[in-house]
Image 1 (tube, helix red, strand yellow):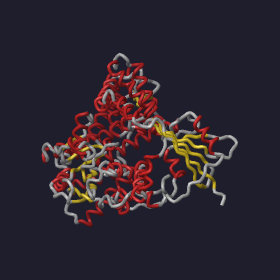
Image 2 (tube, rainbow, N blue to C red):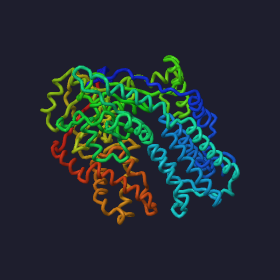
Image 3 (tube, helix red, strand yellow):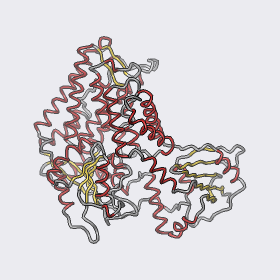
Image 4 (tube, rainbow, N blue to C red):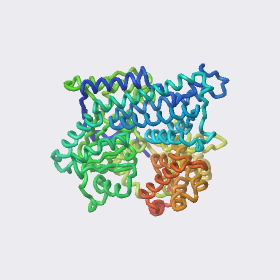
Length: 626
């Protein structure tokens, strides 16, 4: 049973100090440009037209009517693509001037190729996979897809009529405006690139200089009583930002900076674990590195608790992302530091005093927040946001956030029970493999939790009084509320209705219920791998055993994190995949094989052998008629 006292549903307090605000100062010219990018170029005035992302807008003069055979849907899809690209530029601008400059150069290259193609052929081709990717892939994958799309324009044979829409410009209602808007966007990006260069935003980056001073203070500080010297993890949303700040850090801290690059090789993980993981065998510990620079891709399942500080180089608007970043160094049961430090970066104006700096930073962030739109809001729909409130929310402790991962919730509740009722936890080792219990509830229900190897199946018979006992699979988080109770809650005897329901569940075909987004990603990765074996068997012959291992994992174990599954869907593997696409897919597989190991599934199976073959826990809720 899981206790349900209110304290148990909140994270354990006192682990983190209040976030520390880091202000990097912009010159008057840089500050004016900062506002111009957010306000004029990609904000409310939107000089950025995004013509290449929404050609349907120019093909049809009027808004599509309902009977327009999907025209309204097409227009909305293309508008979504445009809005995504606009927000991408703003987010990369907030992340780092280096990442923004790379994106601007990329957009210049893409728009130049598109304009040349349209002028030469009188046609335009929209890559429909871009529209699909914006819902499932990370933003850096989208930019890579955008570059590949531009390169494919040079070879129209590689286009697939089922996936790519070909537009004839002479058939447009507004052909001249389409071309004029592409030219206008191209000129806008060229102008922005010139301003970035003139203001020396990349070469003389005030934000990265502020980072250097902050890191110097952390790694040279005297350790607390009984604590080791603090190491630091610098997190960014973008690999381009990592690549922008790393050269400066390597210059100032030679040999002391570990970089999570795009490959995440086995050698990298050896260095990572020996330097930053306190659960790593102590005889293998080393102190070669003080600073780790990584993107959020490293925040899945990695223990970094020998670091006592996290620096958010860019601001994650989603509170869950903040919790995930801090969770890498805040490992319950493996505390290394009494207090963990969190640092957040904010822009301000040169010469501004502390209070004024906070106002300026809040104002700039509020502009960005509004520019990003509804999907990035951190306020409830009924709230009226203000710059000051936004700034306060970003700077509150992660454990004060209401959004927590399921793992965090369960861990916190378990450790709270262990702390307050140790006798309940110590007795778990003596429990048999099959446990059945009952408690009073507001409904008649039987829940069965069955673990086989690494798989957890949760099934429920909601109404045990009904003539037909209907079984349904549940997500673990859906079942959690129905099994909670206080440690003092009395155990009841199983009712006569329990056994028919229990046997009905046992006879039911086991089914794992996953969140829809995860199901979609897993299915897409599985289909892609199977297609690779069918269409590209000769080119991937040496990788075929590893591909089959990945397929077996997806089918039987599901140990691959979402980021890894996403990497397996970056290139669509079919009969018409380009050589460049095939090469990229091969590189992803080779990197995964180096990281996971050819025999990684065998190691997992060996671990599973040590588990009890099967554990079944059944909980009956009996409706209390009192």
